[in-house]
Image (cartoon, rainbow, N blue to C red; front, side, top):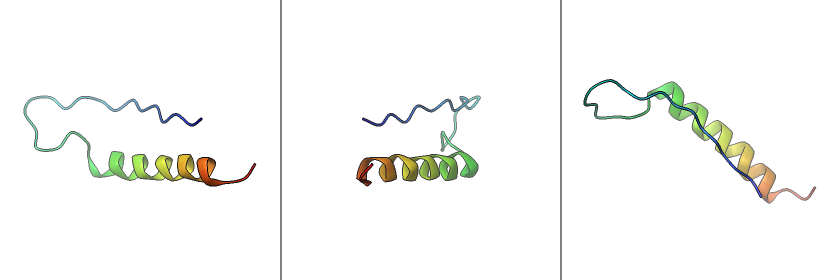
Length: 42
């Protein structure tokens, strides 16, 4: 079992995007760790 728990800050006011570039990059990076854990034989 793998859980990806995120704590991103809310954007003030109306916005076209909820995550900035750095947060998206971090999300995909951590998702890669989760996939590695799920798909590896340990």
